[in-house]
Image 1 (cartoon, one colour):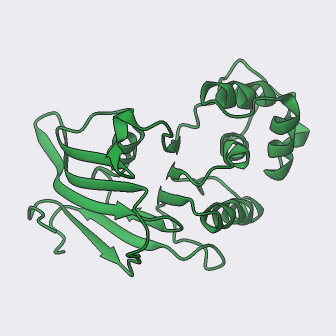
Image 2: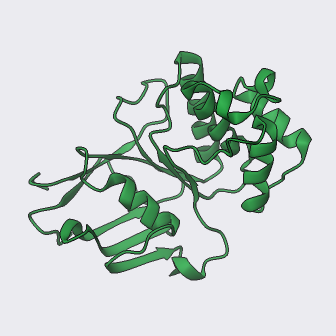
Image 3: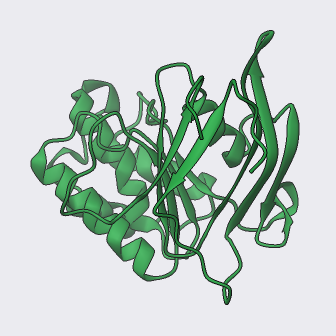
Length: 228
């Protein structure tokens, strides 16, 4: 990889296969905040069945990278390819769950999940939403207005979206374990395992060490001044 010295990404224990195509190919990507470059000439691939743990200090560009891959932000340089086609032309986009949760404060928990599902073309039936909330331990709060939830409950409700996913797509998760208790972490790890087993991929950030009982992750370090 040809990376500038002021921004480096390091892959640890990377696994690839000559018989598979990457779900995502990142080539020469560069993003900046104002006049400051967060990273430049960033290149890596995300393979089916692979989980990548994006690491780096605050302000290193982790959230910016996830938002750029999701299509919510545009890179200043470089190319993103979904399989063999440009990401902007791909029919199946990555699934993004940001750290702000994206739940509608004035809707009930069930209504908000149904709204998100409909927005992204997923099954938005009440039955599916309730089943997802039950899996995340939020069925008992299904009628509660989102604004009344605790931080941990909001996180569980937002992550219930993952229980609605059936396709082997790429999940982009910004601090998915934040504010979760032990039971919540275990549930999310089971969702991750199931997704990887069906050939999906995960790119996540976490300031916490990943649980040893969860899926094995390839580490990607995005930091200034770190030797690659």
